[in-house]
Image 1 (tube, rainbow, N blue to C red):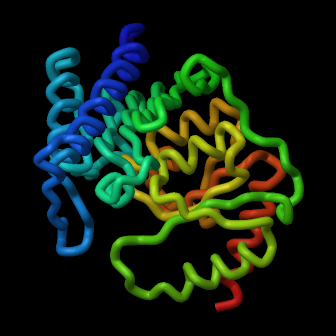
Image 2 (tube, helix red, strand yellow; image 1 turned 90 degrees about the vertical axis):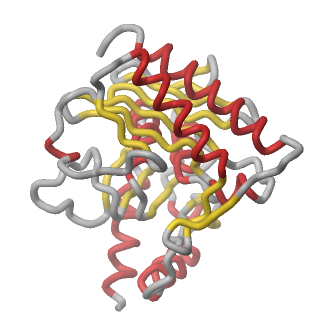
Amino acid sequence: MHASIPAFTRELAEAAGQLIVHERQAQAGLQTSYKDGVELVTHADVKADQYICDAIRKAYPGHRILAEESAPDMRDLSSFEGPLWIIDPIDGTVNYAHGHYQSAVSIAYAEQGRVHCGVVCNPFVKETFHAVLGGGAWLNEHAIQVAQKTQINRAIVATGFPYIKGDMTPLVRRLALVLKECADIRRLGAASLDICWVAMGRLDAYYENLSVWDFAAAQLIAREAGARYGHFKPVPDGISPEFHHQNILVANAALFPQMHELLNRADAQG
């Protein structure tokens, strides 16, 4: 990884964060639409996406970009080893469009099939989570560490739900058992921030199915903070665990196996 990339990534995420703050405060208001008829998107998502991609192309021409709004092509992702940027211009768009503060810009840089740099910036509360592979995890200028709870009945667990409400039975079954066994559940609406909150101890565990741009940066931050990041179901053959988007589970080393067992027990009840 080029030495300039971590500082560039953080500066870019924070600049894009200021852009989305400005767009929400603008007198003209937000323009909204729905992808595939169900997924909310605002003009600020598109504008921030373009801003980030243009900056990367100018600074690092030839690097591949995977961006939610403008370049969501995930083909060959598990086998791609060249320089790769993974971008979510606004994670938590529904929160953003409704005036909530739980939204973030997420930018990850990967090479040789691994994420080497990740930044998740929530500009509404001036919090930037960032990490470089092997360099620890940080919130602004302060090092962060995963919480050290060891009992599931003391854990605050976060999750989320899909835009497309198909068969919700397995999700509701998991939710019911987790709620019964843990201290409480949170549904905050921005996966990248949920994972970062596990990294710095505001949450104790998190599970969900996601898109790669939701977790690419945050998973590095969680790992560098001492969390265990993985999956509660086997990863299919030929798919990199680094980028596998289903059955994601994040917790500390003590709670991870307890959550793993709990979620699989819920599925077995079906």
